Each structure stands twice: as C-alpha cells, then as structure tokens.
Image 1 (spheres, rainbow, N blue to C red):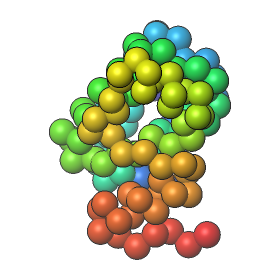
Image 2: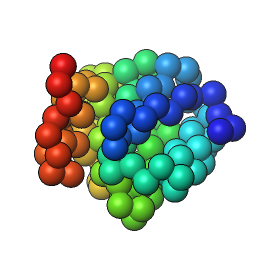
Image 3: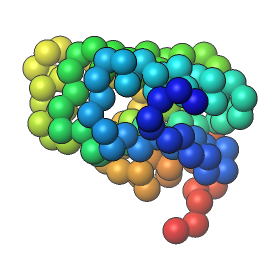
Image 4: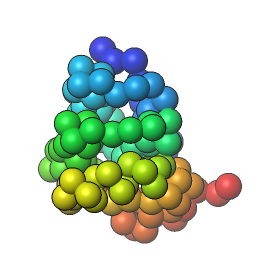
Length: 125
C-alpha cells in the first residue's frame, strides 16, 4: 500500500475509514490501494467511511464514485457511509450524483446493507 489510509478486512468486506483530509493525491492513492487490495483479497463488499471529512470537493467525490464503479466491475458492492449533511447538500447543489455507489448513515448500517446486497447474514454486534 502506498497511501496513508488503512484498509481493513472484516469477513468478506473491506473497510477504509478516512480520517485525514483527502487531497487529490491522497484520494488517488486510496483508489489505487483499494483496487490492489480488491484484486488480492477478492472482497464482496467495500465500505468507504467518510465520517472524518468536513468537506468533499467534486474531484474527491468523483474519485470515490469511480472507485465504487471500478470495484463493482471487479464484483464488489460499495457503500459510502458517514456523509455529513453539509457535504451531501454541497454535492446535491453541484448536481453531483453518486451513481453506482450505495450510501448509508454509518458503518453499522453500511455493513447491514452490504449483507443484504451480497446475500449474506449481517455480522453480529
């Protein structure tokens, strides 16, 4: 891995919790790392937790969405979780669509959604 964002494996799901400011190079490194781990691990689900982000610009939003679409081409469902209301409002005003990427309020709901999408049981809490 080249980037500074750890990617954890939870069963057949990968989880990346972004707790640093996502500059363009960091976002691109995360995308490259994520795709590399997906290739090696063959995960069925991917949760991208953006709770730690105060802002998301269109480039970062596009990288996150493209990562989800690329993951889908590799057989992996993606759920983006933890989007702040201000971020959602900004992206909606800009007309940006997270097409191809599912969303949920938090990691727990994201994991439950992935469980339904891949036909598995949710993990016990």
